[in-house]
Amino acid sequence: MDADADEITSLVGREVYSNNGVFVGEVEDIQLNLDAETVTGLALSELNRDLFSPEMTGKKGVIVPYRWVRAVGDVVLINDVVERYDTGEPEDEVAV
Image (cartoon, rainbow, N blue to C red; front, side):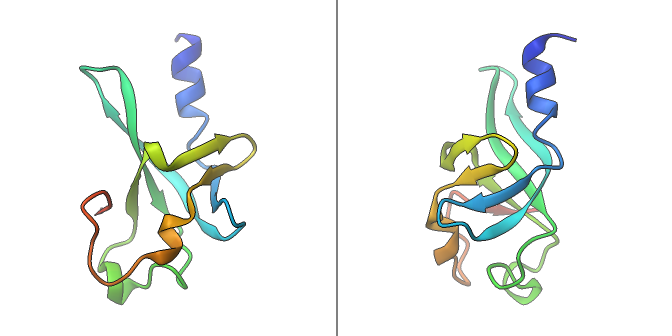
């Protein structure tokens, strides 16, 4: 396995926080574009129920676009746009 694959799989299990420090969820899987060989999204589970209640999502997780990722270290930081989530599903965010 090459180094890039090791880096991608290391994202699984990391906690995700907004850049304001609010816990969002935990990375369960990675969404890839195999043709372009790029990461396109992070599938999150163990969601913060204050942000994503089951009544709002109707699902157990969400996929956030990878372009929202600001930094990756011990945790993943994403833009705070997820904190403004409402009952309508934005076109960039898909429930899983």
